[in-house]
Length: 262
Image (cartoon, rainbow, N blue to C red; front, side, top):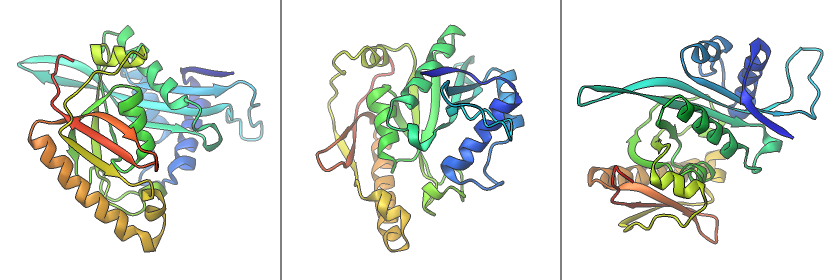
């Protein structure tokens, strides 16, 4: 049984620190410390964990090994036409390697949504790597987020082994928590139909290319070409409204016009 709930106490927050190191291989320059998780909770953010009750705590270090995933957000404020509205920026989601591909990422995101709506927060955002096919599928296809912005080399140099030494380009996902589009997708109703004007492909081989010196130039070429396509599409008012995986495992972003009322 996996329990999804807010993390409590220093030990559970420290487990979040250790899990991000295990996931991304961060060094001290990139790792988020326990104190930041603690402060985020105190000011309206979220540190939500997935706990496997069948795993006993590791007694020697007094760290709850039952933590198998977590998601972390910070509170923010957007001002439009002089009106300030709260939102959450979801900065990090991690799941232990042996628990991946079981839907835990989606469950953690849905608990974020439930908690946010219970506090009358209707908007969440987060950034994600445009070369990560699984993340794109979760964010767009399963959760119903849309994308209207591209952040070039957003974090600068990263110590993450998953980045493969490439610039930290990021897409900005926008999750309108109680919008008709999101509600329909979460209820597993037929997805809204859009006029797709642009498709941007991420080859399934991108993971192998990023992981080797020999393939890195190919991965970088894909990143630069897709960066150009995204930026051009967004400048024309298009948004990422769909994401599919083809028979070869390639990821395909689908872009078209999007109404803010959807």
